[in-house]
Length: 348
Picture 1 (cartoon, one colour):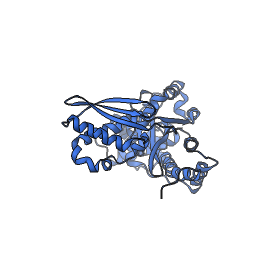
Picture 2 (cartoon, one colour):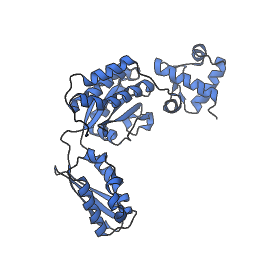
Picture 3 (cartoon, one colour):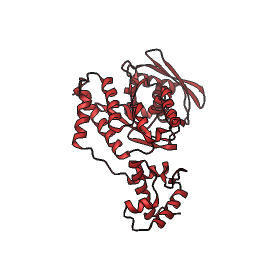
Picture 4 (cartoon, helix red, strand yellow):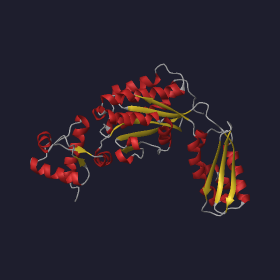
């Protein structure tokens, strides 16, 4: 069954209408509100096809249909237009990000609060703790012909041992040399600083000698560092869910609130998400408590360095265009906010 132009037009109208009304929509309402140029009976048949294709669901209490996660994904990828913030909205963000703050972590906490206020969703931000660990030394220990143990030791005494399967041959001399080069490059640097470095450039002078060994180990080294990253999680707007119709069902509200009770699990989930603006919808979220939700995250930078993530969580029915624009404007302005609140200046 093809998703033809007529079906797409009907689906787009249903998604847009439901995002703003939270009410299931039927064929007669669609016919009256939108200039489809076709009869309610034809619309009804097309909606039945869309339901069969997995784009619509049919609440048992209503004759109307509502979009599925699959429909929201199609909407975000193909239909969503850029929402332009008003000058007033921009001024509010700029003012509140710089209003009476003097510390980096307070600025990030304030950004999460501002995001919650502007979207009426649960918002969050993660950022490295100010007393973040620095690396002391790195070792690579042979186990067998295909396995080595990557040992990372931090100045605090924290140790990470990770077994790595290698697809390239190695000998102990080259393994020891690579460990010494890694220690030389990264000793005394924080984990978050290392995660922002150009690892290929770090090894340019030694790449010929190390050949495929560094190429095999370095990506796994970076993944291990992400797991060691010590971060603060700021949450705001938890009570917002009680003004969202989807969470009138207290059992559903309880599920999402329990997700935040498992604070470390949620923090790890955010750390492991890709950089950039990432939107996961419904069952695209692997965390059981989030499979009725949409999660939007974006990375933010200070002085050009990737520092952390912030975003929102809420029902799959959300104003994706407006929310992503607010998040984007806040992340774009965080660097300026930090400089204005007394943060570090960029190197000349």
